[in-house]
Length: 144
Image (cartoon, rainbow, N blue to C red; front, side, top):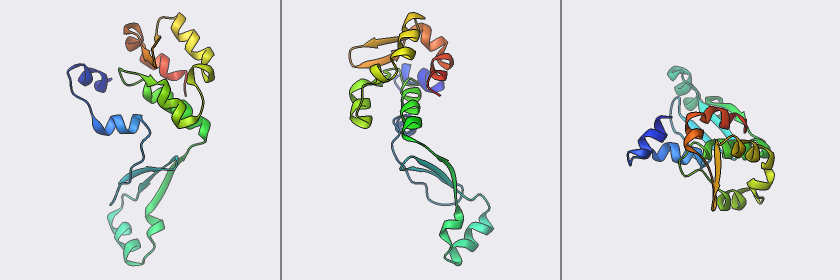
């Protein structure tokens, strides 16, 4: 919710925006996190073990896989994360990324949320209404 408030003030978190758009990133070093090819992983927290693995050229031992997403999980997450932004989910971007229309894919969820006054389809965007901002967790739950 902090991001929504900061965005209203004219500030925007590039890191959050990139994460909420499912952009890939690589973290380097101890305890760093990464997201590549629908896989979230992190590096070890224990510095001694991390250094030992590097010295022994056992780099794979430093990586912990936290999540491997299916394409369906990626689609749902894209919707949930996109609805964290005030401008919402861009239908065109969703189509380009997944090759289908989110309005059709999630027609039941979207229709229910529109009827509750929590979502609005505005041009090429699906976004939270003012009421939806107050009940954002309820909206996001539809896509987890």
